[in-house]
Image 1 (cartoon, rainbow, N blue to C red):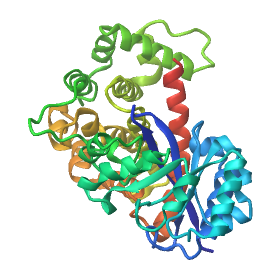
Image 2: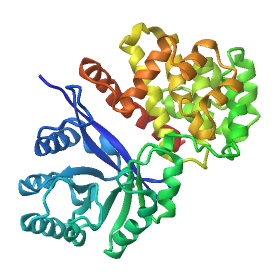
Image 3: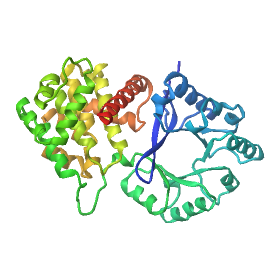
Length: 403
């Protein structure tokens, strides 16, 4: 039986806040990017899996799901499985703008649903759809940079929001912002902003110093306790997190040393690294969530014996590798320049920089899934690990933000 999976891509507002996730169909046949035999079947599969199998809240949280639709999907009223405030209906670019579609979109609007036009270019024969849409998606690779501002202005003239998609770098994000776009989609937030001056993010010096001390192979339990205790905000967050995570404790932890003794050196390293990354307030929240997903996924791959990895030691290293794989985006510096000063152990450093060794292959698989570069049996196994990783990452995020 052919396996099908979901992928989700975040959508940001101008403030860097995630306002939705586009849910995308993925086939396990090895042609994930291009091959969808039937758009209707693909959409029905996405709806079924997001609502029935996974649950909408587990899939997208509290923000709306963005789902591709065709005239046939609307004709079947499949969208009614979603509450109107929990979904944005994306009309695919392949759908003909005929009278039937226009009528269907009017009915959808009357039902309170939001409509987006996918891969749209104003002035190419589909402009009659603009009056029926609240959001128009402009694909950056299909629109020349010097034309983007005019396209955004044309969308605004019709009273719709302009979303620029397939943004892969911070520079492209800046271009879309300067053009006046309202919403942004792509994995630009996981990439460092490479500046000509090689200057780093405002939070970088303190962040790197803390990460270097915490993740040093030579750090002792006593040294880590002292390090955390000297930072009041960090110490408070650590104790709250430990108390929240260990609900069955007879006595609440009221000192950093108690916390370190309770959870151990390795887990304390991870917790402090998590909190340190979360304190980079000049970065979007979704970057931290992505770091969590990578960490949980890499650890999950060890749990299933991926590439021969096994045991608690490999699992802890894989989790740390997943977390630190985003440190270039947090610091706006090339990864190789960040990893050196951290003084990491050889296995972790080689995995992060060169993708070498068992740990490196685990991390490479994690990133390949994120970039949709897996297929066949590999995709089948890794997809299950990813779904579990998203759930665990959401749980960790809730713990950290509630403490």
